[in-house]
Image (cartoon, rainbow, N blue to C red; front, side, top):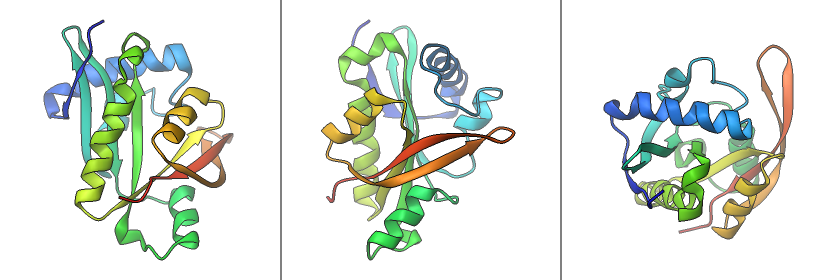
Length: 170
């Protein structure tokens, strides 16, 4: 697969992004929720901005910057910093199909989101499932710092351990 082009998400990307999300779920078990209606999960009302990675074959990846909505990473960062919720956003919905991973697609998607946040005086936080070692390595390579752990609850009483991160300062 050729390297992808990272560009802002538009409504025409929704079905391709949903297809890519289902593929990632099948290969990696991510996400643990939202897979029953991937289009709704991708197009949440909390999305401030989103990007896709596109190849000749279609959408190969996606990332969103979202308004805080009760995430433990937001609470942890506010407790540890002088930031308030108005200056914090959540990096979320990051996924890249397996065939596109060798071209730094995840890094380029993250950089687009980080640039957006810096331009709006927002500090990004995220949580990642502790099982997702490759994602954790990516965040750490990009300078993100661990700020704590959380239990991510989903579905009907299910939960999984998560690690919370904050983006590097601009």
